[in-house]
Length: 293
Image 1 (cartoon, helix red, strand yellow):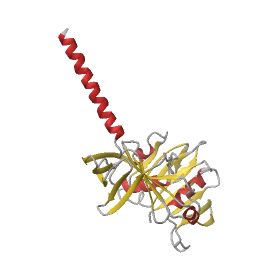
Image 2: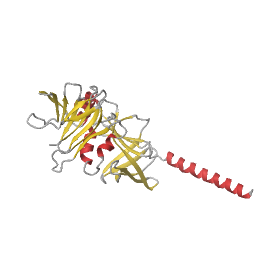
Image 3: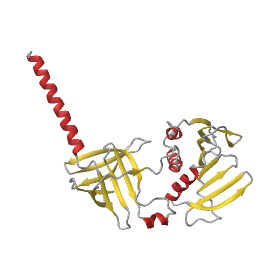
Image 4: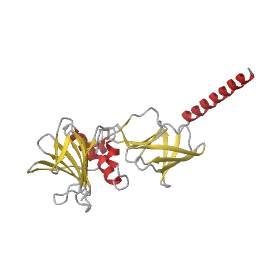
């Protein structure tokens, strides 16, 4: 009887301790949404309500939205960063926030925090950029502007990580019903390529549609990388994603096999290669291409 009673008390104390720790964590004032209105009228939002992720977002004023061809809508909070996060407390009111590179797995410092209360906190980025933030008065819905299966940002991700992460295309295409369709490694390095997708095929160097809902990635290594798709409704979505990067439609031209739309920055001219272009083969297949040369 004494052993049973002793065990019951131990379990009770353990349960109380666990609930106390969980309560302390959930009640920690850092894990909420923080805001600051900048000089240009943009509201920066840092959302730590999911204690496992660091999220940064912005709400843009109407005049800015108009200046970037309505790539953003006024009043909408657009996510710009989201990474796995860990918080290292040095005191009850200060510490640092680290984020994890999702493809390499390394942890990096994103910022430090200090003067933490329920209503305010100071974040310092790169050791010098100091922001005094206030707790959001009400919950802010954060929108991911890159919520499609494949997005413009995936193109730069593939290029930036290709030499560091051998299976980067697989990592990007995971969970999207996209399979490796072709891979060729040229020892000279001039004709290496890799293709992932569904309802498309690569034959004699040409991509064609083999069914509805075609989608994929084609990487001509060192030359260009493209999203291949058949859903025409994706075009304005991708154009908005390009506009957020500073690239808008500059020219439309006919070629022998279809139509090309060129996207560039304000400095773009017909004499310079387009950093992005959209190729329409006239048969229901499109390629949004990021050029590398």
